[in-house]
Structure formats: C-alpha cells, structure tokens
Image 1: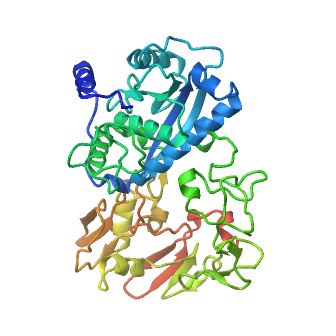
Image 2 (image 1 turned 90 degrees about the vertical axis):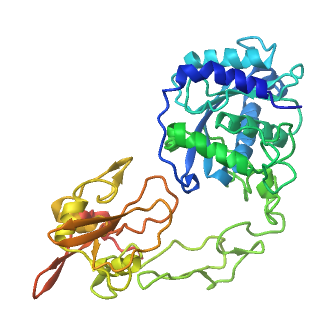
Image 3 (image 1 turned 180 degrees about the vertical axis):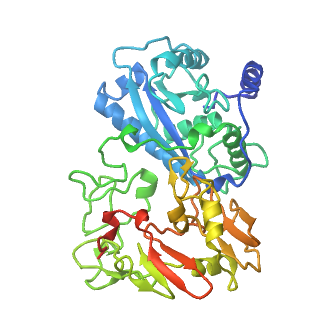
Length: 469
C-alpha cells in the first residue's frame, strides 16, 4: 500500500496551480521556525462506508475520529504544531458523490467543500473514506495549506489499526504542508519515518521534512498563526483524550503516551494505584504530608507542600503584591520588579534604567520595541503616566548581550542619551526578557537630588490588590 502522491502526480499538480497562484502568496520573513507554535484548524468529513464500518453509530464515528486526530496531534507536536478539530460531518444517509477512484474523490471533494463547508472556517479539510477497492492510501494537493481551493485531503481507511490509519492521515496532511516523500539522505533516527513512500509504523519526521515544512509555513502559513477560541474546538468527553472526565480515575491519553505510564491503564483506571500524575504523586502513590512540591523561586514567592491526600500540589502562592523587596523594588505576582535590576540582568552590571524621556518616547509608540501590552495581534501604546509599565529601557550599556534568535536589540539616541531596548515577536514559546510584567508598576522619577517612588494607579484594577495568599 502506498501514498497516491507520485512524482508524476506532483508534477501534474505543480503545472496546474503554478500559473494560477504564483503571485498570490507573499513570503514571510525567514528564521528559526521551531520557536513558533502553529495551530491547524481541521474539519473531517466521514463518508458513508466509514460510517457503516463504525457500526452505523454516530457516537462511535465521533470516538473513532477523535482517536485518530489525537494520535496525529501527538505526532505533530514534535514540530510545535497543534491539530484542533473544529468540526465533523458524517454522511450517514449515503455518499454525496461516487467513490470510484481516489483522484475523482479528491477532485469532487475539493469542489463540494468550497460550498458546503464555506461557513466553517478551517485550514485543512480531510475526507475519511473506507474503500477496499481503492488500493491508494491517500491523495492530497501538495502544499495546499492556507489555500481554500486546494486545502483538501482524502484518507483511505483499509480496516487495519487506528494507529496505522493515523500514520496515513499524518502523512497526507504533511503533503498538504509541503513535505515531499523522503529520499536517500533523509533521516529521522528510526527505522521508519512518517514521510516514507510506503506505509510503515512511524512517529518521527526527517530532516528533509523539517526543511519542507519550514519553507511552506514561512511562505504561505499565515492561516496557522492564530489558535481557535476554545468554544470553536469540537470536543468529546471520552477515555483517551488526556483529560480526566466524568467517572475516570485517570486518562493517560493516546496509546503511545499510555505505554509510558506505569500507573494509568488504557481504560482510564488506576488498579492498585492512588494516582498517575501530579507534583504530589510519586511511584503511583501520594507523597507524604509536608513534602516540598514547589520550591520558592525568589523572595516574592512562597513554597508549597503536599497534604498527603492528593496528587495535586497546592495552588502557587506568593507574597502580597506591593511588599518591598531588594533595593527600592516591589513584589508583583511572584516577581521582584526593579527597572535597574532588570537592566543589569539583561545588559550587564554597569547598565541601569534609562531616563524618563526614553520610556516616554519609546513606550508611547505602540510597536514591538515599546508598548504597554498586546491585545490580540495589536501592540498597545503606553499613556504618558504609564510609560514605566511598558518595556524596559536601559542606558549605560557597555556590552552587547548574547541573546537567543528572534530577539532584536534597538538603541535610540534621545536628548544625548542612548536608550537600549529589546523587542519580542508574537507567537514565540520563549520568555520575553524585555517585559517588566508590572501591572502594579513603580514609576521612578529622577532629579538631581532626590528619587521619589509612586504607584502607577492607572495600571491596575481592584482585583490585583487582593492578597494572593
């Protein structure tokens, strides 16, 4: 059994779509794509034969689809890509169009879904079919992601295990994301890799797949940037989804994850065990009362200890906001906030917080170098009274720090002073070292003889004033 995307089929598709959409895609800036999270909104259409195989039971079909998508999602997470199922359509009365060949099914499906699924915003549409007369496992438009006319995939279930079918779905979806079949010098560290031409049990992608994925997502992956709202994600309470629900004692998730769990069984029970996870669970038992489960990280934090009757570590506690800490600093949400200290941490021991003019000029711009928060994809400008609540600005910088990729240093000359700051791109899964995280911030007004400290009242709401202990 093999994938239907042969070299001949790839060439035919490229010839057909090259002229039509050559100028429609705007390239995005390059970089180390793995620092970003990608969110793929998936809709699945189940044909009538698949419905019959699942005992003609709509609930059973939903469970089967969820199981497959869950396994596919676990494979994708190695690339920091999350698969979110936002809809299922089940053809329980019969097939809407014939199922004679997989090429015909893909063509008819792509035309049908443009109209029938137009109200459901999605990044990829998959049709799950069961047809033993079709020997091809699946067919897809290469690099069709984020292109509504061709973001379609047909996956042919042959009645074998769900894990093998999940391999097929992951394989075909990767073609939609621009990945080609693995060739001679493609390696994943395992005997079988997901993008092999012929189906083999596999869970990893090769170096070639990583490169193809990067190329496609950077050039046309804009639809993968933003996650769905929680209410838009299609959810089903069931054993195996990784969430403890209803009468479940535990839920270790997909089969691959359960194989690594010594406490929780596939049927979501804990035979002979008290727990399967949690900071207060060790060797399937509750840790003794008084055992430290969360160490304090600084003078503004408090330690937490197990109570001996639960797997959960108590809620993270910290000292009350606005308690003094260090040198002229204040605690806020477990962090000792001090502009001078922050500058020293980033730019070295000689650095210090910049003048008020730097904060006023830069943080009032509302861009990635200066802002007072982010609303969706929009940077919020700081009001003049709140400029110290925005991104940290420093001066007296002697050495350029060695930063991770995707950070950019900016230095701006203002009234004879060089102001230094650091930007931060949206959607990165690394800490933002230029963020003061100070909703209850401390404004530092400098003069030749005195330094006064005042609370920025406009930066907080009453909810933030309640003690966190």
